[in-house]
Length: 505
Image (cartoon, rainbow, N blue to C red; front, top):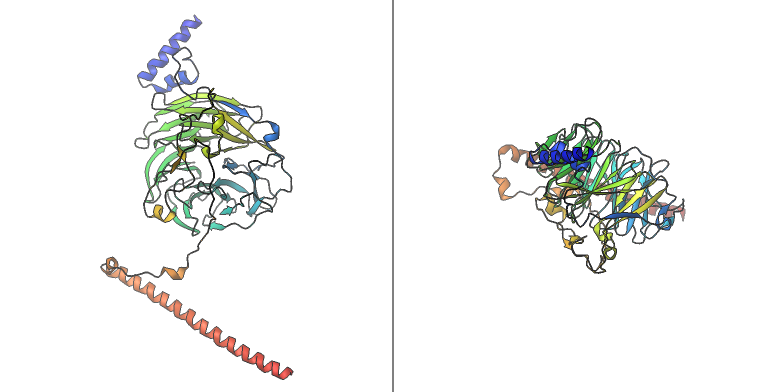
């Protein structure tokens, strides 16, 4: 009776998928009732995770206790950065990857913020540049020495000020140099040109509540956001307009996350009305109904999604969970295919995700995580088992390299660029990183120039321009007169000093 009931359940699940009753049909798939169906072929079906040995962990680190749903860790092929507890301000550690074992309490930190650090992100185009957002309402950009810190660093290359409340999200543009996005608890998104230290785009009135996540698409032409008002928005930042949105993408009250996939679809994680954790796939062209929805479990940890655009695998790490689940996204129903779960005993406080450039291709390593415990950071390696020692082309298609496709000015002018891809066949060999230089613009250099186009504008514009020019001329004249006054005073002082010296004699 049990066997026949289970078989009927499977048949009903398949039929539900066919007649678009997705919720019931997919639940059958998710809960494993299709166990006897032909197994879907996938090269990632046997991916397994393995934690490294104790001597390869980073020990005795006081991981931050701030109640904020960010990853608290950022990794690149050179360094691992971890937000730590700091008295009287905010700080984070930057360790060279080889600096494993016990970390001395006196090890230097990056400590320029006056409030706790909430988020950190390495620049994808320079492995020595990292940005940090803090409760002190500022974003700071730091240039880390090539071999790591020798003394504590408190002077950033540039401080970006513009938010009125704490800055909880920062993320670099994927293809344009020196462009950084920040989102604060003032419900604003700002896009900065780090090379000049100024905010060129401010999105103020799009989010009525706290922004939970913000993510660029692959070319950096669009961003998608998840907000406390339960809406997922797709935004064109240069036109400053919302091009797609979905109300109640997940009906639960707990925080959501939204990320772009390489094909332009949006992947979200959140909670159902019954507080079950959900993941969903959306097409921005039509966000009325999701492409796919899966319900997972009833844990209350916020799911942090990490996406590999080369393999189309999404890894879900819940804060407070002791597991990493991974799913492959394809064009076949149910579109989001569960692969496996890596489980450990200890819950995770945060998680860092290594870019493809930092992986060991000789060991068929397709992902590496840096799991934060209360007092240590533990690398976890995800591997596809292969017998051959040859380079596995199917696991390592060309991936995004460190060279930007565009300069910041080109992107702001409206140009788009796909990532410049590199091959990992012979491993990644890092090139020389150029120093980040910030050129602050002089306000006096911005004197408007009359062009042929502006000559034909309406009288009101001409009047405003002429008034502006007149005011600028006034300022310049005043500066000139002040310089002359200073020069005459210097001559007078010199003359008086000469007279005084003669009197002394």
